[in-house]
Image (cartoon, rainbow, N blue to C red; front, side):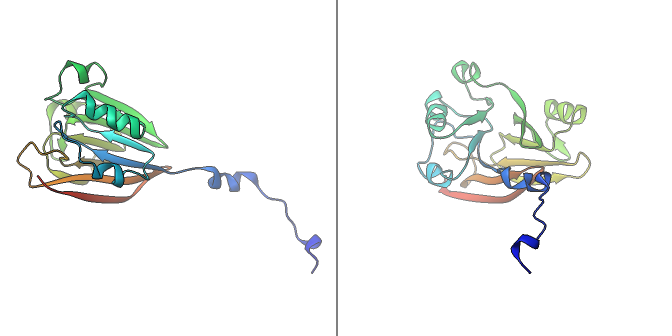
Length: 185
């Protein structure tokens, strides 16, 4: 068979997948005025950083923004300097995933009242929160929503180990979730 005998008509719609990039997310919360330099190493390959509140100071947000594009919400300890830049809740789309981020959120079966009303009124595919300092990644079967709390990356609080999370959004899929321990509080 000669190469000229091959049918090389390609359906360009089938090739569309090769142009779609996945988005690598670095998820952090509850820094409370402390940003471990290891965060930059762990988030080096990330496309965006999401901070789920309790930055502590604008300097934390500024360092993260200077490193990668930053999305975030303010937390209960954040002052007007952070609150003037970041909203209480943030709803956005990343690739084909609708995301809701709030600082005080809870988890399936124990959502905070404000989070519960927002989640039940218009469920996202991904709900990101902080506040509890408890690392939790749970799928809510009822809402068909993945709930993620990266724990606390700062030193303030009662948690024993500081944590952050890395994951990938690829179209409609959320995958390659990694929990990273930064060390003892």
